[in-house]
Image (cartoon, rainbow, N blue to C red; front, top):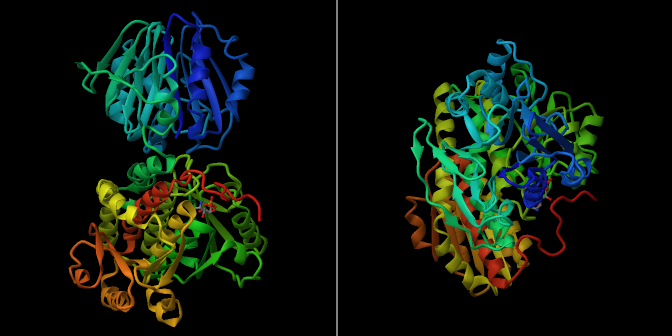
Length: 608
Ligand code: AGP
């Protein structure tokens, strides 16, 4: 997620902007910039890389005098990291400057509309559309122009805006991307998150969706999307800086788990247009999609687990053979790769050494490659022939949650598009799939809301020595991720097993009280997995079942049941993982482990 800061008051704005941005660095970014009104014009300075570069360029803001301005740290979603793509963005006359957090879903359509009206774009960003659209609608009243833009723009945005013709104000607008206003003693501030303003004030207003804030040095006014004035209550923030960076959550991992509904929306919504899947950056023709004879899914860790999920979904929906490989195996096993096959590399960081090596192995053999990546401009994103982004924003916790969920969404969308192009699903089936996908965010929200129940259950297992996760088909894929989550943050030994495989050896490990998490979301496999559960409980296991609402059979077999809402059989992994994430999180917290930075682990494994 990008970071936004704005200031207007009696002090020099640039040092305050740089300081505020430094408090947002934890969110992750690839470039930064500030815009300050110097009494005559709006001056902008941007820099790729760390904020330090921008501070040095501006001598900690000294080279940019002025008492009002906006600043930004960019996490690239559209357009690679570069000075040109860094924010703030100007209109052509440089009389309006904008910083943005979020995704403008209809930016291409708006860009074409504006280009037809002789607007010229300099960047590859979606944000620049906002600067030109404000220019297009501005006839002397900033609020009127802002409201017209709000009616045209689709997607999520937190905006900071300054108008050269109105230097006594700065403006903030919010839809889905958080924005706050801070009321300070010698000036007022806007920010995308509380840490940026705490040094100056603890008296903040949380801007709600489709509200506009207008700040002068002394006053703050709020308006709704109809331009009517509204009054808002301020909140006094009592968090310390550490808690503020986590948005009040105890750990980044919990914060990121609770960002999953929005992450799913961000990865999904821009790609569903007029009832069809539209992956703008993919650039694969229907002919290319029809020609694919086999797909190789290659990744590491949790990304690999989404590849196992994707195998079932692609084979089930698109009837394309899929082979899944650990990247560290793929790169050395001299894989058999043939013409018209596709190698898909899945990677949150886009820098995992084994996954990058696997990509290069495939490319070296002339096989087409596609990267499903979260970090724009990362090595895998740049080197793969095709790319699809997951738009999860920066993920701070080492144990992935929201990026994992975003990878699943990307894979579902790809499978639906491939299935449709290859004539394996009808329009009606596609519409049904898309409808189910669009319900996932609120279903994830619902599952996250019963965290107390799972916390209570988890507390019973903080001394567990061995925990098993079992399932069949897609439920086996989710068992893998559930097991890894528990291992990596609680240091408890765990294994994921195909439920049908237990009797071939592992069941000898089951003792009185051994916890087994059984996942049952594939109705046609319920009975089979239930019989495995009976095998386990008859040997003393305590079985936690994660299953679909309505599966009452399970109560006769399992000791504890967590239900997930009904969704399409292909998408159940996106829901079943939520209680398993919460379970692992609370076991780890109960054991006093370092949840966000578990021992021996790195966020991105850039070495073999
Ligand atoms: C997930 O919780 C782990 N941190 C790890 O397995 C991770 O998924 C793996 O290292 C792959 O990383 P990548 O997605 O950045 O390539």
